[in-house]
Amino acid sequence: MSDKFSSRSPRDLADLVRSQPLAWIVSGAAGNLAGSLTATVLPLQLECDDAGQPVRLLGHFSRNNDQWRQLQAAPRATVLLIGPQGYISPSWFDDRTQAPTWNHASAAFDIEVEICDTPDDAEALLRGLVDDMEDGRPGAWHLEDMGARYHKLAGGIVGFRARILGVASRFKLGQDERDDVFADIVRGLDLTNGQELADWMRRFSTRDAAVTNVATVPPPSTLDPDIMRFIDNVRDAGRALTAGRTLDWPGKRIVAEQSRLPWQAGGPVIASVTERMADTEAGPVRLRFYDPAPGTVKPALVYMHGGGWALFSIDTHDRLMREYAEKSGMTVIGVDYALAPEARYPVALNQVVGTVRWLRQHGAGLNIDTERLALGGDSAGGSLSMGAVLKLRDAGEPDAIKAVLSIYGGFSPDPSPSARQRYGTPDDMLTSDEVDEFWANYIGSVADRRDPYAVAVLADLRGLPPVFLVIAECDVLAEQNLLMAGRFLEANVPVKVKVYPGAPHSFIEAMEVSTVAAGAILDGANWLRETLHFSSTATARDAA
Image (cartoon, rainbow, N blue to C red):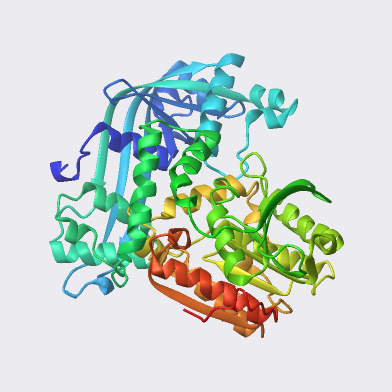
């Protein structure tokens, strides 16, 4: 085998098994009374030593599979594994004289099997496999969820540990291609959802980044320099506070709060800021009321902060809510909804719906015009706003909300490959990996990823109140917001759309230093006043 198709480091083999754990285990005629080969497809785990070298394969057979008894008598076997692979079409190439080929990663292990047939063995092998496979999944499943059924399952398996005697791996991932052909292959894979194979090709390439990271979409726009001051400050503060540690979600929240604390200073002083607990149908919810003109009845904006349903609070968004209250003249009500993963979908959504109903019942005593309520929020808050208005409509309350201000909302857990590549990179404010993590953290089951109240791109949007979609141009979520704009038009819903040039995700929080962010806040406030037919000479302003 050519050295150019060999692994580059021990991690290559470990990651190959982790990414594709299903393999054939083949035992030969020497241990088979029938004199023929026996093969079984099994999920496997690879154990490595401290230097990363492969040492053992772990797995289990069904007790009804006679192959484990054959291996008990003659323990030598071969494991065959094929990882990421794909057909490479010459139709992708500028040079049409090239021939089609296959790129792939594969491994063959020569092993000596030790059968491990005790309850403790079954426990360790099953738990290790389940924990690996369930890691990061929505509503991850655990062995304990089976209850008493687990013992029946465990009794039906026979585990094994296999000492690795030799490995023959092959990573044919474009190493023998010309640079221009390699670039064409990567581009073709990116455009045809072959991202995993493309990533492995980039991993094994020694070429210049201009070749391996060839663009398959238009280049990203330049970020607004003032907004970058905010982003750089928050990132640097977060890194310093994290200090290289791996944090749990409570720890991440502390860092998120502290890194944004300086950006809450300054801004408008609101005449009355009070808090109260609303006893809603979804349980008690803490609300913060920003009333710029106490004693006068006025519309209200019910606001949900962003943070991937898992981070931030009404404190991190205090300045933003004061800005909306001052510029609109309306009461702004911050909702301290429950965060994931402690509270998964639909807990927070039900709290927002419950809050709206509570305000409609009790708002008059708080100088709120209950017939002119708006919902609003950024990122996850935009998603909650849309989900709540859909739920209220379907519950026979289509007039409960008169306007929705959605700021770069999250409407789908599945950004397209193009969106991920263009604005979801590790250098972006919201990466595509973070999008995946937030959704997996929030959604408790796979079925909920197709619930239209959570994933608004799937919803029937007819009969909703007017919507203003604030879209950040340089945001991995921009594409799905533009899709929502088209769907609102299709559903005859009045919709205002504005794309803010050079703005990344979270840009609205940079109002202290960015005219783009300040202008977006003013746009939203003026749209609310116009849509809710609200006039206050003390706060009337011209559009930015």
